[in-house]
Amino acid sequence: MEDSTPVKDEAVKAIQNTAGAVTESASSMADKLQQWLNSRSWVPDVAVDFTTHAILLAGLLAAAWFIYIVFRPLILSWMKRVIAKTPYTWDNELLGHGVFRWLTHLLPGIFIVLFAPGFFKSTPIIAKVLDTSAELYLLLSTYFVFDSLFNAIRSMMQKSKVGAHLNLVAMSQIAKLITALVIFLLCIAALLQKPPIALLSGLGVLASVIMLVFKDVILGFVAGIQLSTNRMLAIGDWLEMPSYRADGDVEEIGLTTVKVRNFDRTITTIPTYALISESFKNWRGMTESEGRRIKRSILIDTNSIQLATPAMVERFREIEHISAYFMAKEEEIEAFNAKLPAERIKNRVNGRRLTNVGTFRAYIEGYLQSHPQINPEMTLIVRQLAPEGRGLPIEIYCFCKDKRWAAYESIQADIFDHLFAVASEFDLRIFQEPTGNDFREILDCQSTEE
Image: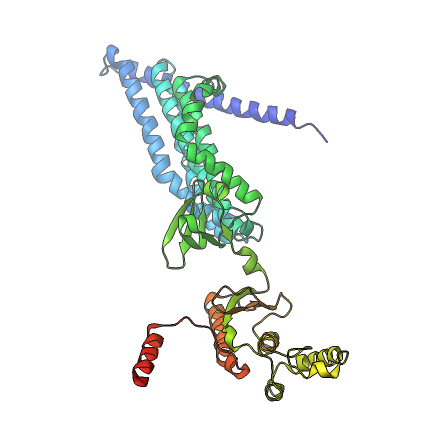
């Protein structure tokens, strides 16, 4: 691979030679103007220098104004026509976010930087003021060039698959912050007429002040990097953070704050570093999975639980979804009871018997497995939980195929509507704590008996 250093050196020399040539040409123009004014009798000798400088200053500023007002819009109009004919989209993003517009802002500043030293060679103070002012203008315009460039890059990456998983807002804000600090340092160097490296020694003194003033920015910067690299949070994720009363979709992940639009349409703002120091729930795993979990219990009145009688068994046989359960269970019970003495089997307590609550659990499992909106490939459990004085909890644990909130709630409600309604077919009662109406009925019954 050939060394590119000579090529770079030649390019730098060419630029320096061009700038030197422009400066010499401007100096020659200033000398000719001064000579021309000296040859005019209507200009006093004491006013020649002042008149020369005034004309040069007015001409320089007028030319810069012409470039800004007339020449710059013409260039932008030409660039719009060229970009409209290209088949690419990235140039449209650059144009739309103002990259080319801010680039053309550099033209007046470059013009002043090139011509001011030559025009005012005999008066270095004016040349220095103009040169410093033009440098500050160029530095500010350069910052806005990078600012619009970062916006364009973020917009382009948001449309890609890779960008959808990155915290582009925080990354662009970090890049803008670094650019602003560099531009600020260069502006101070231009004002003090010192090289930027000489100012780096003073940054150590300002480090404590900067850390105090930009504490949230620094914490957000570190948190943003952790969120991005670990993919802890992305725009569009469902975030739940009770400590900040946030429960909704992430709209923006900034350098210092994260905006969450709650489901009640309010907006909660969370400090970015809080997502690292505190716990939160990200529902992305649910949205990317094949189902949304249903986990809810039915409370069965324990007084209604009993062994299944022959009449109940015959009635249960006609119920859909439990035929396979009955065949397997009856064979298992008969095989177990066949090992016991006949006199012991006469007592229903001895041996094994079907129960109405066990059959109901089997029915629920079969019903869910055949339900079109329940994913049978994911965990499906119907289990008993420990009773705590409010009946026997029968918990349903399964996953709904439709993950949309409204549809999910409707499917879940339909399932439990059905189960509450059919519980009586298994001679079971749903547990419910007594209400005021229950107590009134008891009192009415007692008063009637009296």
